[in-house]
Image (cartoon, rainbow, N blue to C red; front, top):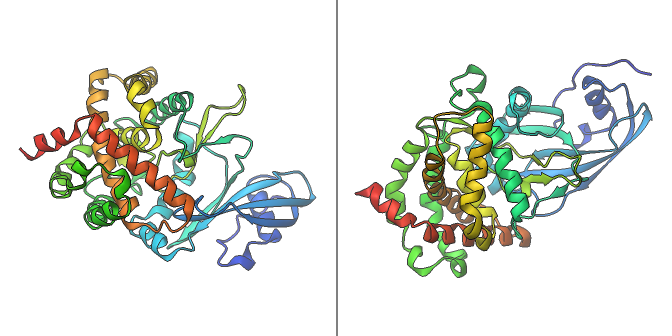
Length: 368
């Protein structure tokens, strides 16, 4: 058998992603194996908006290792790749997995390789296909939503009020930062295209909210940057969540940490609850779900943060989620069918929540 070797260089093109390179990856990870061959299979159109995803099917000449791994590289779509560059999404994810993930109490996927140079990166992660992948279009079931809220409670508690750390410097603050500047610019640019392209799911009385919402946005961002701050995932949506298929499995594993940053936990709450729950489930169970998140948070050691604080922050987080909905719906390329269907459901759900939670009144309070 071959001995454990050095970590390989970042692959620069498809020819570099071969059996010899993957052998080096496995050996650097501590597996004494030799890869005989690998076959690459696309995971399908619309699965990854910002990155290309492939399945690596592996055969070994020596030793035993995983038969399938997942390869993640930059998107082939120029528009989506430009957005990823603007928000530094690729670097955030690579450094999060490499330097931060092992400090988080919430379940993470296994990582075999993570490296980046500029906008060129490669991630090799464990295959989670034995689990149940969430469906963004169908939305979360109640059981799935409860599991996600508990998972977020453990994530947020791991870094609660402890983000002034040199090892977290690569994660932008929610505001002020390139992230907030990009989001505010994206929201201003994306509102009209969103309303035009998704008019069928935007209530008429909210379609003209643009000027008031954009005027309130700087104050909303300023609030999202006030204590208590934590590390947030930034893209907690069903297509990034894998659910346990048996009682022995961890209930939730989240992938795609490109949007990770430091800010109010309310951002994750609003984003998940607004864009990922069927409206009927959210309406019936949202107070209990926010309560489940708060219970997990306090059980993990967070104090001086009440259930009333959690509900107040949730409403503000839901209003903040309209920023992301606008950027995603108004600036990204959704020419593939599945991508458009998922964005349609997200926009429909977020605007319904804006109405249900009386968030126009919150905007008026901000502007008063």
